[in-house]
Amino acid sequence: MTYDYLIVGSGLFGSIFAYEANKRGKKCLVIDKRQHVGGNIYTKEVEGINVHEYGAHIFHTSNKIVWDYIRQFAEFNRYTNSPIAKYKDEIYNMPFNMNTFHKMWGVITPQEAQAKINEQIQEAGIVEPQNLEEQAISMVGKDIYEKLIKGYTGKQWGKPCTELPTFIIKRLPVRFTYDNNYFNDLYQGIPIGGYTQIIEKMLDGIDVRLNCDYFEYRDELKNIAEKVVFTGMIDQYYDYCYGELEYRSLRFETELLDMENYQGNAVVNYNEYEIPYTRIIEHKHFEYGTQPKTVITREYPSQWKKGDEPYYPMNDDKNNALYRKYEELAKQEKNVIFGGRLGMYKYFDMHHVIEEALKCVDHYL
Image (cartoon, rainbow, N blue to C red):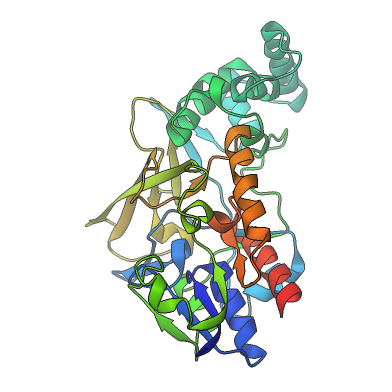
C-alpha cells in the first residue's frame, strides 16, 4: 500500500478530508476525472474575471466554525446574494419580500401584502399541500406561483410542479420586509480571487492525479491505499446493482462580451417556461469587477443520463428509498467512506459539505 487514503474527487469534501489527513501525517492520493481540481466550485480566470465554471457558487452559513474554517484559505468579500427574477417584461426582486409584493400588487405595508396572500390562499382552498404547486400557493398565493415559481421550477427539475415534492419550495425565504438578501445566514460572501485557490491550498503537498477516472483505473488503484474516500455517485460505485438514482444535470453556455456591464446583476432568473435557460450569471458582479469586458453564462437544466455530469440528486420518496438500499451496502464497507452530494445523495450547499467533511474527519481521523 503506497497511501493511507485514496480520495476520489477533488471537490470540497474530498479536499478537506485530504487536507486534514495530511496534517495528521497520513499519506493521500487525490484523483479527479476532470482536468482541474475543485469539483463544481472551480473558478477560471478570463480577462481578469473569476468565472464560476459550474454555476453560481455563493458562500453562506450561520455556523461560525464553518465560516472560520473556510476563511483560512481565502479572504471573502461582502457580496450579498440578491437575484433578480425576469418574467416576460417584468422584473421582480428575489427572494419574495415587500419589494416583490409591491411590484406584483402595488401594496406598501406588510399587512396589505399578508392580506392579499391570505385572500389567494383561501381562494385556493388547500388544506394539506400534497405537491410543490399546492405548497407554493399555500405560502405565497397564486399570482406569485404562476409568475415566479411555476415555469422556473418546472424547467429546473424537468417535471410539472404537481409532480414535485413540497420540501423543494420550503427552502425559499418569504419575508414581509424590504430586504432583497436571499439568505438569512449570518455570514456570506465570495472568496476574493475565486474558489480554486482554496482547493489548491488544501491540496498543497498532496499527490494529485487529474484526468483520472476512478472506474477506468479501478483495477490499478484497488491496492494503492488502505482506505478509499469516494465522493462520486454511490449507485455508480455499486455498478447500479439496484438501478439508477435520478439526478438533474446542467449545461452551460458561456460568452465573453465586449462591454462593461451586460445585465447589472450577478444573477438574473428567467421564469418563463418557454425560455430554455433558468438564469444568466454575470460573473464580474460577484467581485464588484470593473473590467472593460464581461463574461456571462446561460444555465440550461437537463435530465441526467449516463455520461452526463450529475448536479442535483432528485430527493423524492422513490429515489430516497432506492438510495437507502445503496446506503446499506455502504455501511458494510470496512475500507470505503462515502461523502459529498453524490456519495451521500443529498442536496448539500457548500457549508453543508464542509460540515459533513469535518464530521467525517472527526470520526475517522
